Image 1 (cartoon, rainbow, N blue to C red):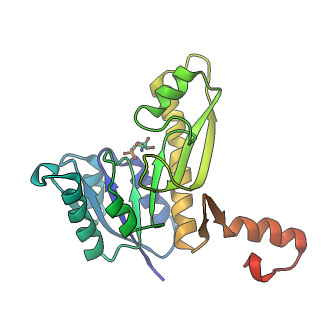
Image 2 (cartoon, helix red, strand yellow):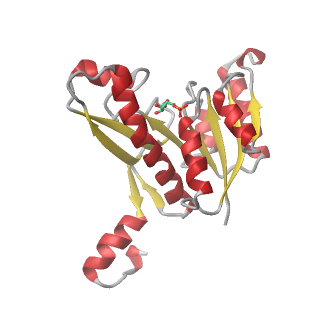
Length: 221
Ligand code: GRF
């Protein structure tokens, strides 16, 4: 079954591009990019969408009286495009509970820190200022709280002497571009299951548990 993906963006869209590239390379199969929605007219991500013949929609926050009204319009567009999976990819708005509920378990976000540490803006700077030795990124399902929700994938990088916010952000971004396509692939292949705070990656269990026991049980797919 094809997974219809819609992407919410505000900026350059390099994560969106990494997912497009992975799909073009055949690493992610059976997905269709339904639409890209931006709250910023000049977002480079919209340009990337147009370059790939994907519908690019600018929703102007100024045209709506509240966040709730804005998100209702977003939900309408997502529904219109039969969206199965919503990706927040550098989307700078906090989404309403109504949107979270409309796509419960079907919205992912990427954050440039090892959650639950360093939520919010300038996560890389927060990590540097705190003095951590390891930083990284997190792909997670979205809940109503900011940068919360069950974690799907995390990837780490070292923090090196002399790092600046930019150098650390660049190093993390390389890992983001691996983590997000991987999470999308797992979703599209039906291999993610949310159990409370945990995301079970069925493939992992199949490979590891299946190999160890040498036989599949009803619970090991
Ligand atoms: C990334 O660092 C992502 O983790 C954060 O915003 C940035 C978006 O970059 N949420 P891009 O628009 O995907 O290039």
